[in-house]
Length: 396
Image (cartoon, rainbow, N blue to C red; front, top):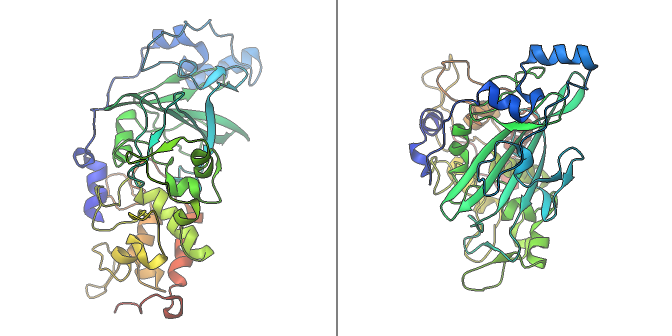
């Protein structure tokens, strides 16, 4: 686990990326001003504007420049096709909202997701664990956090497949008054008014998204087939003929794609699948020794708990991670049944690395706060791993 996490944090060479991410500097101040004045102001300037015009109103922005036809890397969120009217927050025709059953932890941010598929196109699901999207596919994810006692849009991320081998990845940061959202490539180390929330640089996005052959992480079979999913689900995708296979064969039934086990097992397995397995811990990822993705077999089934890779590669498997002060003779495991304290998976989830420390936290990047509910879910699963429930006795 240490090697996998370190490789994620220190390099992206193991990601098999199809393109080299752009590392352009932040747009110049005059460029930002020309697009939308509120988004270009610093926090101090924005506070001054509030004092002049009233809290939440902001100073009048200059008229934004028109969107450019054919621009595959728009500077302004309104030019990405998400909204027909950004001011009214009217979603454009053909754009559908979706919510995966199990969400990636983002330091407590509320999120809304949308997808656009070009008319007449289908998603190739010949490999059910790794869908291939048609050129022209766009996905957006909006993040919201409480600021000064009210929920505020913080950022919106875009994935846009502009060619068979190319995705545009862009991050748009919302102005304090919510009037505009402009692309910021270098990220924001700490968003003012939040509890240390950081927007990662666009160059960092590849570290997770390159774990999928075709980039999107949350729009996939298991996440959309579960009953907790909403919006555009797997069942609707099948009904509308939006999924296809090269052979033209039948698609798996949603019932065969369910996360297995009891409610406790489902919650933990789904969380590990979404947060760890889809991007890194899977047979083609950077962490193949310890796999947490729920895989669909050739017959189109997920199987039972004991069929999962996390069961086979984690339970009673020795771990090199050790808590500070642990006796030399003490043994630790990735997961030790009924023993959370000697299960290093839980330790990695329960910590956040200090600056400069050896990377051990999970998820390994873009998180400064522990997912307490997620930790509790995995702890409950480990504590429920009794022989009567089908688990092996704890290793020594």
